[in-house]
Amino acid sequence: MVFQHVDPMLFLPQRMNLINVEHRGFMVHAMAGTRPSPRHEDWAIATIQPLLGNIITFQAVREVLDDFFTDVARVQICSIKPSYLGQALVQFARIPMRDSLVLNSPHQFGGHFHFFCSSQLGLQLEKDIVQYRGLVDAFRTPL
Image 1 (cartoon, rainbow, N blue to C red):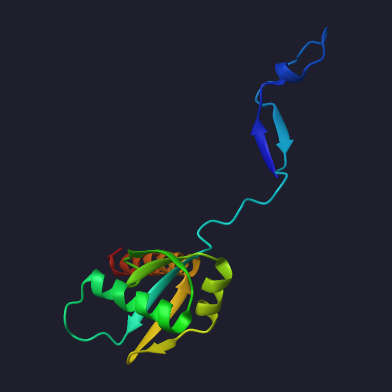
Image 2: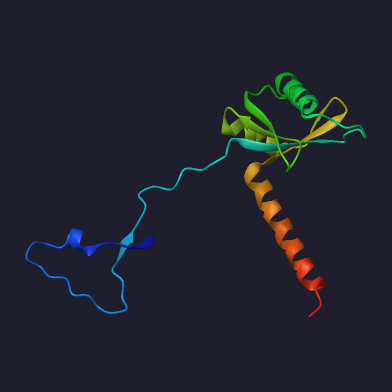
């Protein structure tokens, strides 16, 4: 439910006058007919642990994830992109596929553990870390 400013002239019947009241904007109560559709529900953040001490390119991470999805998980993937939240952002073809991998994490494959979390959870964790760092910096400054 939202209150929005509107032009009342559009809704006045013919031969009716508008009386303006000072310091009061004309508002109308509006409700959305449906719930907004969820965004990015088919994305997951993939993290592979333990990684060796060597520098690993994103192409190597992509190949490991492709092998995992085709050989072990047997799920359809739309895209795999690099991410600062983990090693990769993975877009699944169907939301239930992502949900099953997130709920059953970690997955062992090739001597590594593959962790998946929903992209919404990852963004929330990032916001919490930024707020925590802001509080720490605020307490460090002398008064």
